[in-house]
Image (cartoon, rainbow, N blue to C red; front, top):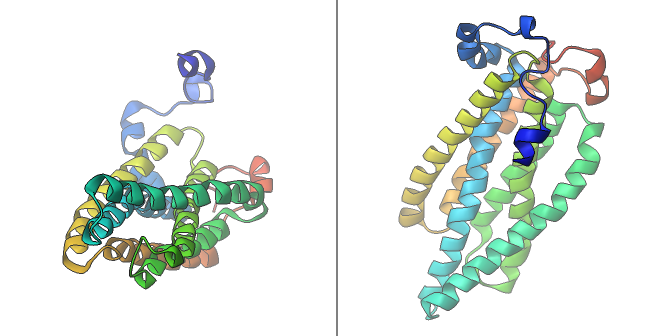
Length: 239
């Protein structure tokens, strides 16, 4: 009710400026010609995967490890929730740092930084043998930092680059990319978990983050875009 009454209605422009429906339907794909928007779609694919992998497989990993160590199922599940809480708390604290610093960087540079941190955080799970051991806690802190970095970098990038008149269509395609990423990472991650152990799904997402990192570096070199502070003086999406 608050959202319905409080948010400004419709596209933030005059009605006569709005593109026709036929153009809006395909504008999410068409706007992908902008390399920074295409990068945003790629970051959404990975960032939403990061969030789901963390939520599903971290708790499952901790629970499975507890059961294997002879703990009752309820206590093992509690231990799995504990390590998820550690990662989530670290993500919350790191989000405050990101919010205070990322406007100092070019948005593509921000994605490079965020995806680099995310790749390190997820790949670090390969160094964890026992997720319930105290020495694993620093790795879960790093994992939480990496997860929120990917999510924050993806969101700020698309918020900056989405064109004014087709913003909703572009955001819709951004979210669709995330949904596809969730489907792929959940399915493949589950197979890897059963075949290779608890760290395997995180390694998968870490590699995916690394691939987007390389793409972001290329975009930063070839089409860096404007600094956030200059965004008001330029049109969103200008190359």
